[in-house]
Length: 274
Image 1 (cartoon, rainbow, N blue to C red):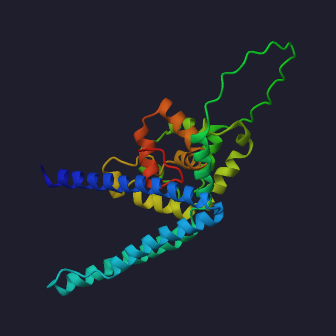
Image 2: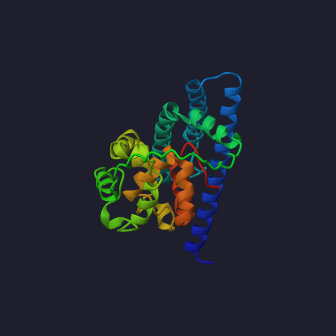
Image 3: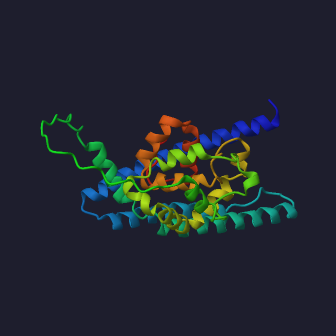
């Protein structure tokens, strides 16, 4: 086994361990929200409690990194590089802790909705009707043109990769599946909704592109191929707004590995990949 293959295998094992911890954290967060709800803690307060716990965990990593030292007997030049790297990583962890402490709004409510969905009994079979009354025609579905949605996504350069670096010049299949998870009642104002989502999550999207987009180390191993695609902004918005519907439509049409990788990188409120 050559060095490059060994490094790739080792990094793949790291990704698997990280994925395991993320999955365990999602399960644990769900349990905490259930416990808080059972003792009468409201959704907003529950979000604050969990966000502070998660920010504290990141702050603990900051302390551990900040107090680390280079190997004993290292050359001064190596030590200087070591401490410079530690400062950079510690500063980045501090920014993550700050963001984590104020993020996560709506997760407790989403967990409650998920629990209600899981506990809901199956719907009874529909009964045949013998009425002769005419059935009113449904309201027309507002049009939602894929080209218009794509044009809107392209207006956010901090969230998408340059055209020449993208994995797919045409990601229409991904966009079609994502748009199929947009409900009829959402279509009339969906572009405005997408734009608001991108603006709200600018910092997260910038970091997602930097850490997992074209040219990043994870992408060099053939993973996270959707990061940087303009179509992915729609996927992420639906991942937050309608995760079950998106997953169901995706599994009917596309390979789930692409969606699984994107979930691992984005860390949505409800993660459905294993």
